[in-house]
Image (tube, rainbow, N blue to C red; front, side, top):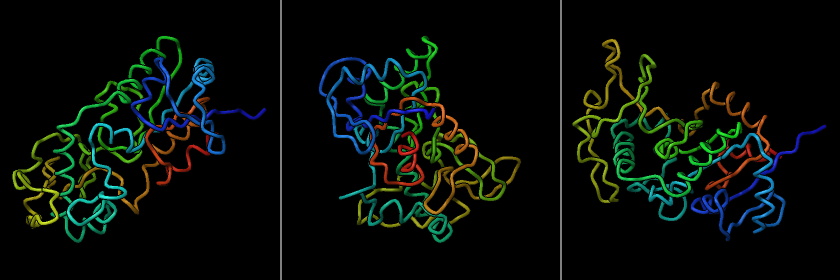
Length: 265
């Protein structure tokens, strides 16, 4: 017998608290071909019966915390969009500029807090665990807001802003320094008229693991790069066993995450 998985698309992340905690006014749809529904009672029946729940989240949930999405109208840093800078080619050509961009994003995130959607997901995970049920967050976001809200079972598809990876030895570690190096202090202004810092490569973040000294890069998945095979394997396992998938704050157009909601159908 084929297993049936329900997909619910929550159009506003701040409404997730309403979905799992009570109230009215939720817009949701079961699957991609279904008509939008506001039948909260029907959703609660699905939710109550689900044993393994996956929340697939995207930039929309963090946008409600004031995090720039760098997509759509006005989604520029200086004169570039994220896809112009978040590539291996851009880093090889101008590591100073790419580090300015990521330094700006790191500093912005230090001023942001999880919103009602993040908090509701974390609270829901804790409540379900006491019932012998599971909730796993699979996020496209690199901002750690799910973690800061208290979620424990998180798969970060695209990595994390506060991890670095050495381009020489491959060492990955958490790095929360602000600024990450002194040469980036006060740099990264998003103003289109801002001048590029043109920081010498030797003054950019360097690896101190075992005296390596290699150039560090953000440990995130850039355009043109493949996701970590271990991350993909864990994601596939969670999607294979889930019986309810909540898609929150994502248009599901960026691959490979775009293929996950149809996989749940």
